[in-house]
Length: 420
Image 1 (cartoon, one colour):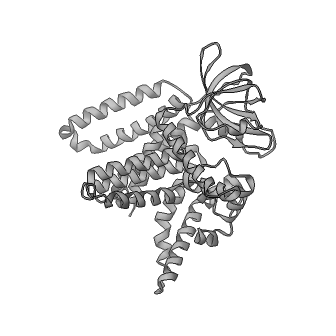
Image 2: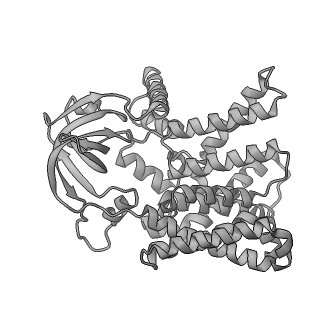
Image 3: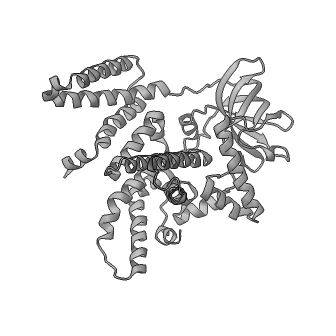
């Protein structure tokens, strides 16, 4: 059974040594340029074997072994090349930077993530920092894409030192943030808006337009916060009460745009494009447009790991349908994970990435097994049972991880997910 599975899921075979290499590079093996030379040497040998395949066809085992070695060393090398060394100096200065994510309102400040571009001496100063701006009527208008000039003291992010506390410093280092700062009122100035580049600017403008539509329709408070998170992944309106309520009820995943949301967008866009006369039978054009629309929606949501995973998987599915080939779900999942980890190997250590892939794998594997245990002739009962099986399967996959990271297990998940 297992050999058949490995034969049917080639990307899973490629993913395993790559994952082991990433984990080894992160936890076990110290940085060394030797690994890059090994990776290059193995790659050259693989190219020679591929070109001279007929001559070495009887040594397929050697080709497979070298390929796994290459992927293992490539995983280590990607970690070394992308490893972040935080700046631990305390430094006062005047800086120019762009707000990279939607600001979040706190009790007495506005929390922002700023990508510093330069200081006032016109030296290039590329660094992402966590900046808290004193809350007032002006700072409440801050938005993603704003270009700021501000004076502050940058300090290394330190944990509070409480036993068993969440390692916030390490979490920030994983997303390449090493220092934080507090900016008082009057110590900053907005130089420009929508300063992140044409594509991201367009996505931000569309998201702002949609949020304005919600507000114009009368949505306020919790309703606006949930609607914004559900549809465009805008989480700045969510407060701790909402997050705690959804977490305790087992519906936290709904507030994170993921496969369900991307799937709905894919379904609607496919129907709309198919209904256009000159696109109905042009599968190639429709496939390309679908992929572009899916990734633009992903861009609007801010490209969290769950959306990137879903958009990548759907892109593979669309491509496979275009070539009219049979697909294996596990292969699509493995291929999407492989591609995302090549782009950013540190995604493997992201909680949302881990939860997203474990949930999908558990649903694909456990849902058919659980669903087959009970049969209903009634259509409604059968649908309810099917949805219940999806919920149970997802909890099997993510329950242990939720306990490890969040120290809680939602006991109402069956009822909550049925309603959702």
